[in-house]
View (cartoon, rainbow, N blue to C red):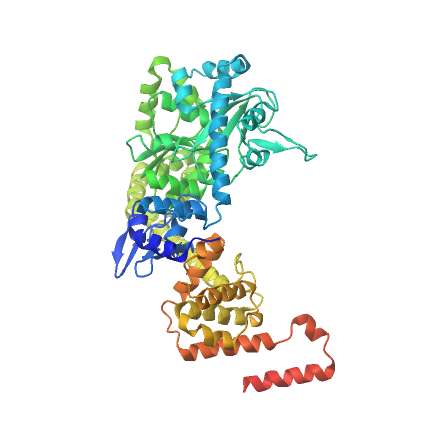
Length: 588
């Protein structure tokens, strides 16, 4: 069952969407609305809008939209019930008893509890004889017991049932352990076994202090060296960062992005509390946006080997597009942060701080790295380098920043600045043309429905889809017209399956005396909710009159009367002629 309508209305009224969003987004007033940089994708021009009159939001850049519940679900990675609980607690409201299905919420809670008990079990095992190999490894990496305790490090022994036996003794079911990815179902379907064995364990903790996952480092040469929890109801590796729960309290708006767990732990032990790492995957846009919530600047501290340099090259544009300033740490002699700090002995922290202070921004890093590809002692090499460098500088969005680097490069190579700026202008025009082409392609794709992974029928039946979409929006905005519309058009006449679902849903709610949009976050997927609010924004500036409604109804009727392709193939000659005659008459 859903939450009572009155409770949800009061919840939204007592959680003003502008006040809820403000801690996550720097909002500015624009007319009656509020705007800001979207927290869900990287952008430099604000396209995230708060509509204060109806408590909704929509981003014209990435298409995310909804109400205050939808926002909390996405920004805090919560399911519907937990998002409602979050807002109820914020507003000091009691949840109505036994009025909603909280099975997923209960499962999430049990997963958190199982993970917490698993972390305690692994930590305890580390300091027992079974964990000696793991403890020797950590001490061999020069980690103190204080650091081990701070990060809650542990050990999974080589018995395939140690953890599952322990957790089942505490009352956890096999289904809960499999859902948490702490255990794996046997192929026979009979029983489970531990997901992690013979590994040093690294708990992954979210911003609210919950243990949400684990990383495990094998003690042998077996592959994979590191094994991470797969995605679960409480964890998505592409949307979380190791040790952000610690780094966010470091008192700095700069975060250090490391390559792995041990680098983060080593630099933290050396006194640098603002380090985080990705979770066995390349940096994602979601992780960059998460970083943006807690930092203005990122120092990339990846390994200096080839893999680390490639990872750095991939990370730079992702971080820049998220609106972050980027610096790149260059560690001498190809070492990673952990190795470098240890190699300096007692002077490790001071030496590491020195290379941090010397680190240049990402443009300096790319320009310096580019020099290795050219022989700058000959003219052809200089020309090749300057042409490649101009492409890097032309990719910078800020004209001022472009000019600074152009001046610096021209001075270094003693070339005419006007000639170099002419090259930049040529590249800028090319980039603008390419951006315009991509924008036009996107517009055409949006209009045709191609690539719409939510509304998959739009490209197949574009005319009826457009009319059905407009009719659904009209119904939402004009609930008093529900009886008339339902008398004119039935759901069976809709050719688009998604629009048919919307039509049936909103028609039922309106006729039942309920607010059309009050529970969409509970009753539709996140993408389907985004689609609904995108449709509402699309028609917000369009005058939908009764005459418009008549046109929508006419088109839907015409399209529903058309036979399907397979039906046309089965028509007799007489039936086909009759069908063509009706089409001609309809066009008159």
